[in-house]
Length: 155
Image (tube, rainbow, N blue to C red; front, side, top):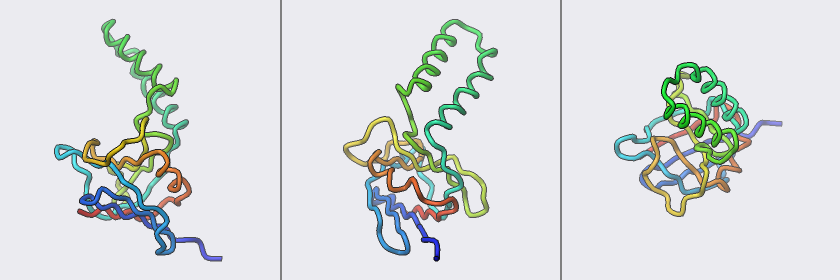
């Protein structure tokens, strides 16, 4: 049996993500993309890894645990404790249930990824820091795409 071939195509001008499986359209969904000062890059990329919410929160905890001794003022301590609590309690979640880390065709990670968010947006737009953000319900069909799935981001 031949494994299915997936492909993701993102249109920046149409604010649309399309997921194809064996050249058949599986999903067409609105997206939010990067603001003018932090644009979403164009070009050919691939999915390098999928990071789930649980592992994302664990990474955040480990990161802040190492930073903790470097915090000097009471205001910073309160701010960091509040941030860590919100992250670990699930009160905020900037990337949603899953984050797809992208890399260029040479395998170098880029800072932009494909993810959901804490809340769904009512209108797609240009309001992220460069990432491709989907509504939560639209992110679900992507959860099973394999690593190395090609991602084409075009104007």
